[in-house]
Length: 501
Image (tube, rainbow, N blue to C red):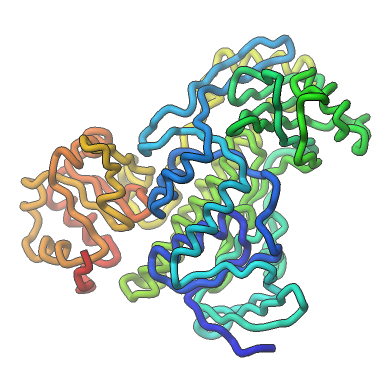
C-alpha cells in the first residue's frame, strides 16, 4: 500500500453529482480527489433534465453557456389519458426566476464530458477514473479512504471530509449501516433511449401517458434523441419486451423499428427512497446515495446538485476558519426535508400515473382536471438551518437572479458570496462598525444600486434581502435593527475576515 495523500475532501463517485462537487470545491480553492470506479464516463443516458436552479449552479462555474449548447429548452409538458385527452398542459422552458429556462433536457454523456473538462481547469482537484473506494472510515481529524485501482493496487487518501455521491446502491452508505426509508410503491419500467429519424415522434417535449393499459412517458432530447419509458405489466417477457418490434408495439408506433435506433434499453425500478442519516462523522451522503425519486418531475439530478451546492460553501467556510464546524450540521437539516418533498411528490404522481385500474384512472383524470395545480408542485423552502425561515415565511426559499440592463446576470457580479441587497438609506442606518466589517469581509457583497437590486427587493417584498452563497434567502428586513440582526448571523461577520474583493 502506497503512502497516503492528504487533501481537504475526497469525493466518492464520478457521476454528475460527484463531478459537480469536485468543480465547486475547485472553484472554492479547496483541494480534492474524486474517485470513480469506471475508467470512462458512462456512455449512455440516465438523467435527462435540468431546471433553472441547476443551470444557475453551472453558471457559477463559468460554463453555463457551453452547457446551453448541448441542452434543449422544453416548450411544454402534457398529461394524457388512455383516450388521448390532454388533461393538463404546462408551459415549460420559459426564462424563469433563475435567469435561465425553467426546464431543459440533455443527453447525459454530453453533460458529463463538459463537467470533467471543468474539473480539469482547477489545479487543486482531480478525478481519478478506474479507482474505487475500498473502505471509508472516520479517523481523528477527518476521514481515511482506502483506494483500489483497476490493477488491484491499494493506496490511502486522507482528508478532512468525504462526500459519498456513489449512487443509489451506495457502498459507502451501506458500509455505515445507514438504512433508507421507502416512500410510495416500487414499479418496474423499461427505459429506451436512442435516435429517431424520419418519424415525427410526439409533438410535445414531455408527455406523461396515463394509459391504464400501459403507463408510459415520452421525452424529446437534443437533436434526434428521444426517450420513452414503459411500465412493465405482469405478463411481459423481460427478454422479448426490449426487442425493436416490441418497442414499436408498446410505443403504439411512436418508435418504429425501421426509424428508431436504440442505444439504451434497460429495465429498472421506479422507487422513492430517503436515507435516514445523511452524515456519519466527517462523511456526507449526496445525490442518489441520499435520496431517490421516480423520474416524474425530473428532480433526481437537480436534487443531487442542490446537495453539493449546499454543502461545498459550508465546507469552505469551516476549512478557512470563517465558520464554526457546527455549520455543517445544517446540511442534512436543510436538504433532507427539501429532497423528501420532491421524492414524495414524485411517488404520489407515480401512483396516479401508473395505475392499471380503469376506474382508478377515471377518478385520477377527474382529479387532474379539477386540480391542475397539483400537477406542477412549487419547490419548497429549506428545512431548519442557517436562515430565518422559522420566524419569517419568506426566508429559506431560493432567491431570484435578475438579468441587468446590460444583459449581465447578477451572479456573475456577486460570485459565490453572501449578498446584502438593500437601499442606501437603510444600509447607512445600521451601525458604522458593522458596515465597516461588511466592507472588509471578502465573503460578503453589498449592493445598494436600485438598478441591480430593485427587482430582488420588489419580488421578495422587503427593504433588504440577504442571500447565501447558494442563493437561498438567509433573511429579509424592513428596519435597520432587523438588517443588523440578519447580517450578524452571517458566519463570517465579526470574525475579522480579511478583505479579498
